Image (cartoon, rainbow, N blue to C red; front, side, top):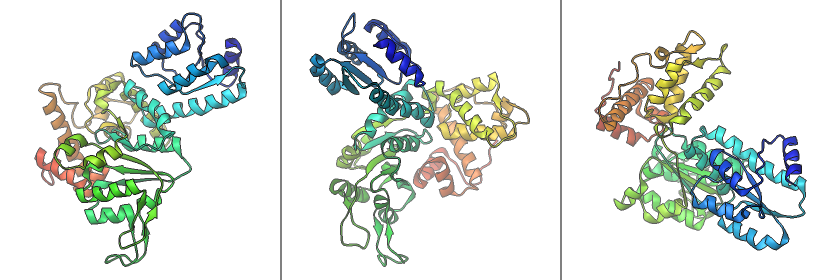
Amino acid sequence: MGESLVDRFELEGFACDWHQTGAKARAALHDNDYALVISDITLPDLSGDQLFMQLLAEHISIPPFIFITGHGDIDTAVNLLKQGAHDFITKPFDLDALVDRIHGIVTPSKSLVESIFGTSPAIRQITSMLPRLAGSNASVLITGESGVGKERVASTLHELASPEQPFIAVNCGAFSESLLEAELFGYEKGAFTGAARTKKGVFEQADGGTLFLDEIGDMPLSMQVKLLRALQERCITRVGGEGSIPVQLRLVCATHRNLKEMVLAGEFREDLYYRINVVELRVPPLRERREDIIALSKLFLAEFARDAEMPQVLSPAVEQALKEYPWPGNIRELKNTLERATLLSDGRIISAENLFPNNEPKSLNGSLRDYLADSERDFIVRALAAADWKIQACADAIGISRKNLWEKMRKLGIEKDEQFD
């Protein structure tokens, strides 16, 4: 049976390994990044459920498991589903149906890595979670610094769950309290000065799909109460309206702030925190997953090459500089830096001078805190200059709220029209 399965999988275009004992399969799962495992319950050296439970106990990232079982092992297979296995099939089984099932699992997993950008263990753990989350309607909280790709994670989850439905994103820190209520819930004609027509809010716009609330930590407490009520009752009332409007949607929130600390400080409602944080996905900063930097850089260069006459590559010295730089602006800063370097480069190879035209990467002397503060300050000053010192435009460009940008400018001693080297 194993031989016939391998032949069929290769005809379908799948690369696959056939391990005929549980021990060999276990070793291979430690050394390789598989998209799927198909395992018999009965193996020569140990049972399939023993293999699965051993892997769980080792706390490694496990790909989806489909178990093949005889009728006498169905109870075992059901128990494996409760432990986290993906599915099981009983002998004799329909091979075409199995292949269709594999296509539904493997194809999304491959596109996930490409769309989120990265193959580091931390990113692989996120990508392994998303297909399971797509099958539920649980609220998801995505945490991480600005620029790490939180919205990309949210949109990928949406594409896996309901790509034909709307995906609506809104930055909670970009609106005042009164404007945020109108943005979320909509308003009736004449509800306030300037409300010349009825407008649907993002809750209604996302009905049936996904609503992504970015920077949820910047939402005022009074609005948190109204958001909690809408989530509990699954209906909203427009500003100036009287009737309730039912909505059904998937809620995904994101923040760069520590909501637990905000709850303790009384700045964020505890009941709302638990409502939006059924599952938390932390996207690590680029400096914590340096193995992704070169792969990301090559993806960006390939993207830029579509609009250029000559594709460009990185010199070995530049690759080393990219891996050593702390990237306080994360993926967003990396992409902007490479785009600038491709414009400054006259040849096919991007040099260190193209990458850092004004100065070499900062030395590694001093504390990490001082190093990151200096890098953050330099990044913000450059972003402000690029936005012509327009605070809102700069905040939008670097992915933080206007309030947070002002706070960072004050903390870092940045004054308007400051020059940089």
